[in-house]
Amino acid sequence: MLALLIGAVLILIQGKNPVLAYGFLLQGALGNKGAIAETLVKATPLIFTGLAVTLAYRCGVFNIGAEGQLLLGALGATWAAIYLEVPAFLVLPVSLLAGFLAGGLWGAIPGYLKAKRGLNEIINTILLNYVAIQVVSYFVTGPMKEPPGYFPQSAQVPQAAWLDKILIGTRLHSGLILGLVFAAVVYYFLFHTTYGFSVRLVGTNRDAAEYGGINVPRNFVLAMLLSGGLAGLAGSVEILGVRHRLMNGIASGYGFDGIAVALLGNLHPVGVVIASVFFGVLRTGANTMQRAVGIPASVVGIIQALVIFFVVAAATLKDPSLLRLGRREKGEDKAC
Image 1 (cartoon, helix red, strand yellow):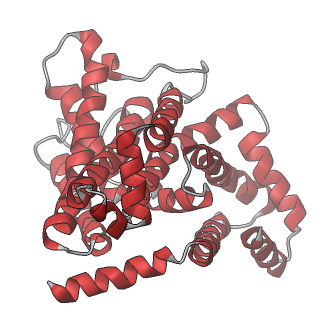
Image 2: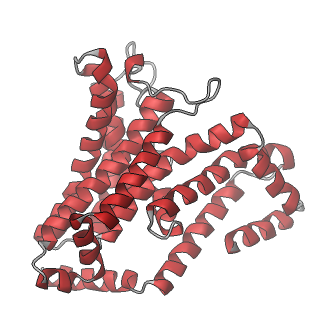
């Protein structure tokens, strides 16, 4: 709410009516079937990245690398769809699995470094984001570049690998259903399984978990493996449902926004779905607001940044373990 109020002040400074501006934003995001579909298209990868951050944080690991894991997932899904020779009916599930594995293995790297070397996962995941950008750039300008090579992008994935459309005439695809299914799976995993309990115990009280015989390092690695896999699925559904080819800039900030989505959703799968739709509204309605009122779409970017700021601030006040996590990591790094 504070972010929207500050956004309204910025709109007033430009001599525009904030009520009118926000009205056009909502109209552009929810005004008709096509607008709602586009909002859900943009919410779909956020569901996966929000779940990724949620799962990792529940284990006491702060995954800032969903952006890079998304990119590796997109790369893995594209490679599998184009180059693996499998029956047509297996192309889609194999591509999704490849995206999950690629993102998961990329996420497991900082998980392993934290578990075995005590290295700060926040720093490592941030650094790996930039490595992932360069890895994707290498493939779309080199080995996977589409002939005759005018643009830095891969060839189009075969239609057998495309996610089905939910609404004909729109870009809304079945990746949304997949995201909702995974939200239910993550919820069940975290709150109704023994391993999910151990994950949450490690995140809540690491010392108690160790005293209870839980293998904390293994939980770190597995949590980051699963978290990276979920982020990798975000890249997979973006490729197989929307873009249909790999190119630079495919992540579009979905990985970083996933952090805000997770925190805004109170680190709960149901909250993540709701927060993803909210961010989808902001992303979709920004252009309509710009065209109708003449306000730069960057104002919505400022609102998103403010949402992240206030959500993180509120989460820190509500859960001081965020600060304790940072202090503990510094202590571990010095000890190493």
